[in-house]
Length: 588
Image 1: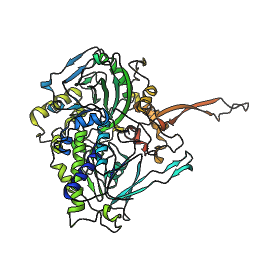
Image 2: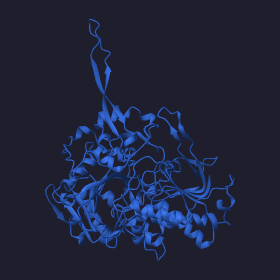
Image 3: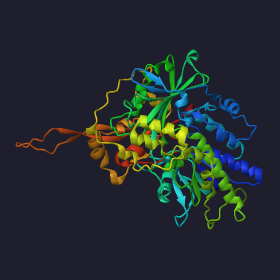
Image 4: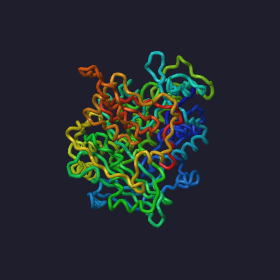
């Protein structure tokens, strides 16, 4: 199936690119064939974000007379609640100190921003794109990047076969994956996208850049009594439970937002470069909710949704080269999240729009342009692949570059010195230097390698869940709507060359941290009784010897990608399951 432009991922970056391409087609009287494929069961099903939304990029994308706030509410009854109060607290185990807003980094202030569900915004954008003529196919998981005969240029993607059983044999429901070919393939898979990571490796797009570092975001949505609701409240915290001293280097904090009509969006973000293998991000989040200054926000309420997703934290210094022959990286596939602002949706939307402009120009305005697939119905296999290099130039000249460059050293300040010095440095940058400091600190090494040996730490005793405010993991997992067909090959695979790592390294050296950092209970070590070969003097065989063996419950996976990042030696290869599998978020 040929297209002029194929977009992999139906998130804010991909949908914005599709909309901007259609706008340019209509403005210039041209016609391009544009397709979006999304591995979730519907647009928005795999989207999870805080989300306090900066509307700058969206308002640049949409026409001047577009009222996206009213349209969003009319389309899916999802409110965009204007921020009315901004609070930043430093928590101790029993109390808190509010940091005056005047002392906070300017990028943390939320005047003019809105509390939204990003998944619902994507559904709204998806509907708008379809109305403009974009073809959108949810439930199709891109499993493989397709290259030309020489392997030098991207020519599309192949979707995963469906209807294959655990034994690797076709079932009665078998359908071969589809080869989708395009002149330009834009990868907007989100953080740690499997196709995007393979492209970064193949084309060495991160050459000369810092290695990417990540955080794990865990989120719940609660419905609370209206009399307890504070529409527009935005609250962030640091300190308890992740940091207990000024120089603690565990990077992270929490968020709590009151969205109309009566929702509380709450969560925790933990930098995955933390050293303690006994740390359990999910249980830290549950413990945080019991804090005396946090608990009242949930009183009388009901938890209605749960989910998790990793986010890029490397910022400006870890941005890869954005283009390659035949395609480009958009949004969080590249890593445009502003870690100080705690926002990436606005930069993702902007990257999609800028990429669309560059691709439109490359296809139709350069050297006379090409005959669109919308007119010819095919792509000449001898066509030379185009690299839309103006996308890189456009992003370098955009306000996104300026915003990220200003705070390029802030995450590294936390990593080097700890929470209090990191916060002080961030304040200095945002209030005084504005990014003009003559140094740039690079980050080397993988988050997996930041985990230290278990012998240096003490197991953490977390309080048991009460089933009202705090929950066991598998109970909460049900609120994510996660589903995979059990009879399919596991999409989480131990790399062949690292087959000895789970039992031989992870469990024995690091006390099996995957049992704790996975927010979906995918990984567990269970006792496997094996007979001993020891024989006594009278010929009797010795008793059974119990050993622990890794079990991968792939059906639980919420597609957060944490395991591909934090596993010792990165021993897991995260591949896509059948399209439509995974979480089914409705209000995330």
